[in-house]
Length: 168
Image (cartoon, rainbow, N blue to C red; front, side, top):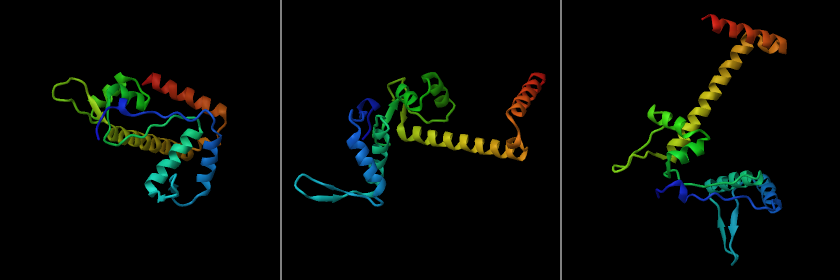
């Protein structure tokens, strides 16, 4: 089921969030996947994967955020990809050309197409890399005893670091 992101439809939260908040509170108390009850009384169990998606959707919408559910084989334009990542299109093109995010070019076209699954994988890698870098910086700061310093000590350390950078 391949298509463009234009086929994806964002769903806005309802204007009156009360029913959504009730559902959110209910889902917080339920520890196992629930079931759907149809208008005729027929009950169908929710697979755990669907239940998790429901929890995520309700959580996002109860915070007033719009949601979109899309298949992982969804194909995006470069502008749609840039919007998804929250970056400019030129920045995205640099990521594509450097090989950080795979892309395709249709045989007859010059426009790049990006699979949503590849964008999500890039996003997860980037998050992990930033987290690892922050952990390393925190560990290094702790080893140097910087957590015991005052705001003035940090300011002085920054000033020294900037001076050293100017000299090199």
